[in-house]
Image (cartoon, rainbow, N blue to C red; front, side, top):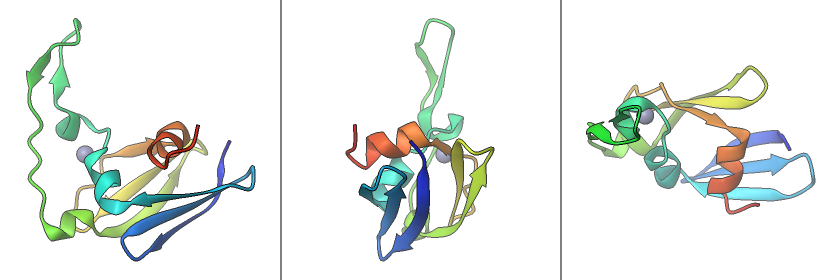
Length: 100
Ligand SMILES: [Zn+2]
């Protein structure tokens, strides 16, 4: 499963998948699901949280500046507040947009 097209429409990311389905994903939800270490917090080898998330959101945090493909399996989203360390795999996007 891969997206054929990713487009920001208003406050949503519209994803057209190669099986013909489409998913819509709120940018705010997308940002809050950012999988990078500073948004998720850091965990030790036992999976315990050592450090909580440090992110504080502003309006710009939920605006997409740029979406770039990463290695054919994910996209990197650059947000309006210059946060761009989150790599969203297709699986994650699929999950977030309510697909299976
Ligand atoms: Zn992040």
